[in-house]
Each structure stands twice: as structure tokens, then as C-alpha cells.
Image (tube, rainbow, N blue to C red; front, top):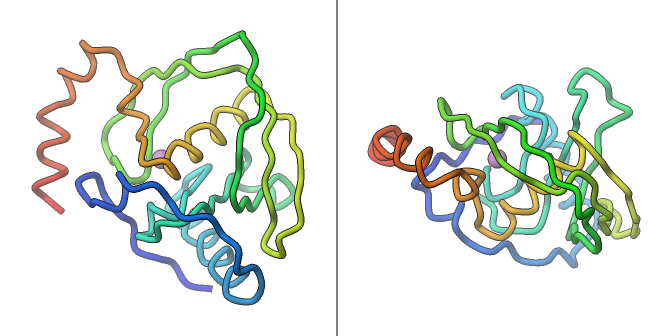
Amino acid sequence: MSKLALSIYGDKVLREKGEEVDDFGEKIRYFFDNMVETMIVEGGVGLAAPQVGVSRRIAVVNPEPENEKTLIRMANPRIIATSDETETMEEGCLSIPGIRGDVIRSRAIEVLYQDEEGKEYKLEAEGLLARIIQHEIDHLNGVLFIDHLSTAKKLLIKPKLRKLREGR
Ligand code: NI
């Protein structure tokens, strides 16, 4: 396994809509392995393919980084239901280092996804796991957590974002 280079805010790929996966098998398995390795090394709880420069609908999530059993590999994840109840929690993103902010998201979701072999799963998630999945699916649509911040907070982080963009 090898660690992949992270895309940082300002990289165009972070704003692109990822392509569906239909070529399951060896190559996708290998890519998932490298995504997991990268997430672990970078200390994240989730990672989406655009964050390593690949515009495809692939993400890995693990709310408990130390626990291999809670790791989920998702291809083509799709939210099919959301709770009316929302929750506010502070988020960050490996592609936007140094910035954190409160994001309102659905407290619970139902999601469909495929594994590295193309097998389909349905998952009901809530709390932190639901939040991470929503954050990663946003990435697959070119959406970043900073897009969800309040207008005041957006203004506040503007200079930092400019620095990130220019410092790439
Ligand atoms: Ni992120």
C-alpha cells in the first residue's frame, strides 16, 4: 500500500463531480487500499477520491481510526433517506488544513453503496458516522464543508482560504 498525495483547497478536482464506478475488481481494490492507507497516515476519519486527485465516486470512512472493524469502503454511495432531525457539529477536512467550523447536517441517514467488488449494501447510520458519510458524499459532488458555514464564518475564513489557494 502507498500513501497518495492530498489535493488541497484550490485544486480544481475538489470542485468536480466524481464519475460513477463500474470497473470493479483488482484496480479498484488496490485504489481502496491506498485510500485507506492515506486516511490512516493523514489521521482522518474519512477520505474521498477527489481528495487524492481522482474524480470518481469512491470514499472510505472510519469513525474509529484505530478500529479496523468500523472501516467502510464505499463506491457510488447514495443517500436515500435523511432524518428531519439535524445536528450541529464542528468539522474539518484534510484538504482544507487549519480551518474548522460548525456544520448542520441530518442526524441520521440511509445510504446505498457498493464495495470494491460491486456488491450492494444498505446502511443506516447516525451521529458521527452519518456526518462523515454526508461530508464524503459532498466531496463526490464537488461540495466542501466550508460551503455549509454561516455567512459570518465564511467571511472570517476568507483570508485563510486565499492563503491555501495561493500556497498550493
Ligand atoms: Ni473533507
